[in-house]
Image (cartoon, rainbow, N blue to C red; front, side, top):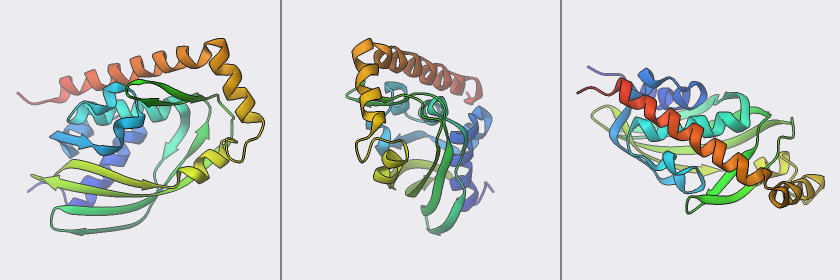
Length: 189
């Protein structure tokens, strides 16, 4: 018998925090779909473990010491609800994408972030096959100095004007694609 639904759910967030490709192969179904990947580099939309590894690389590029402490977890059959906090220090550019292109790049602020989230996971064959989230992005953006508009907003504008935002978007998308490629090394068959 495989791991419990709770362990699979916790494992998914361990993969995001660490980039552990072997664990990704163990907890992420080959048909995995991340509904939240629309604001991420294109590689984060790749089905299966590759997309999860890319998502983790994208987040870790922005936040060092990334962790996801769980505050509540419940499951019913093949559905798991997990409430947690996304924590870390904003030491790299936090780049958001729209339709695969740069939407916004928030330059490193050095601040500690702590954002509450609820994730709904669907399992198949004991592995996570679908992900949806309800995140407190307003709090996250406030912690990063974007809301209410403050000095970070001018810094964001300057980054976009200088081309540094585009450079960061390209570098992070490439890192996410490299992370996704590591899934092939851990895919059976």
